[in-house]
Length: 95
Image (cartoon, rainbow, N blue to C red; front, side, top):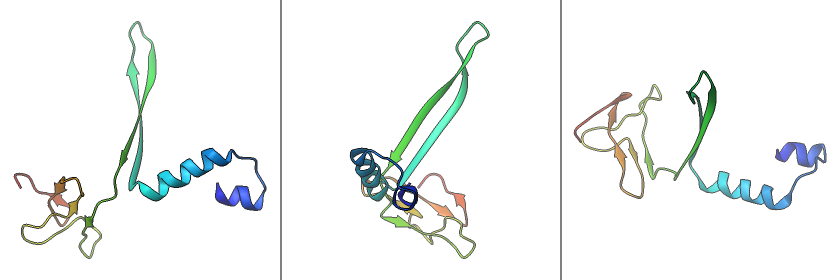
C-alpha cells in the first residue's frame, strides 16, 4: 500500500493508513481465518475470524528453521506467560 500511495499517488484515508501502520508495527501475528459453514436448509456461508497476537519475547529455531529450544527452555514465549516447548519442530506436551 505504501508503494501505491507514494509512487502511483493513490487516494487513501490518512487515519485508516495510520491505524494500519500502528497495527502492523505493534502486533506480532495477524491471522485471518475463513471457513465455509452450513447455515441450514442447504445454504452455506463464510465465517470469518481474525486473531491478533502480541510479538513473542522469545522465538528459537534450529539450523533447519524449525521451532527448537534445548533442555527445559520454551521455543516460543510471550510476555503474558504463555510458552510453547518444542524440539526440532516437534511440540512437546506436559511442560
